[in-house]
Length: 116
Image (tube, rainbow, N blue to C red; front, side, top):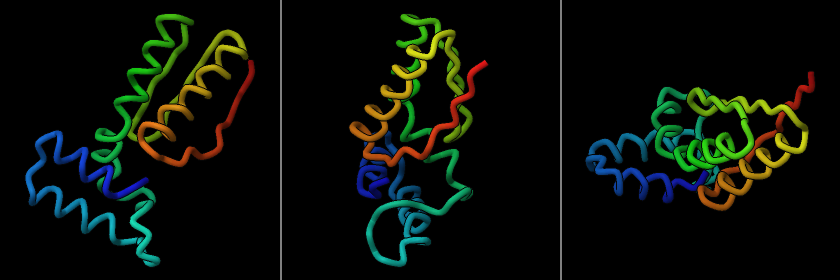
């Protein structure tokens, strides 16, 4: 995650300069290499940051839900996608990569795919 992108989004959303300063300080915690990327795992601001960064994913998944009958639910930065057919699930996973990597410049971790 690029820190500058997140801070820009917060500013666009109308966050105060004090709030942005708190987030900026928080983002610096694990950044020992001064890379301006990444953040502390399971940190206290994760829910807020997910709420800022992930709405485009929610919108894309809801569009797929209407088209393909997918089930999608997100809690903070974790989400579950269920589909009746494997190809529908693969399409959803492709969409996740496109949205998060292209629009938000986030690195997507491994998926666990369960087939019933």
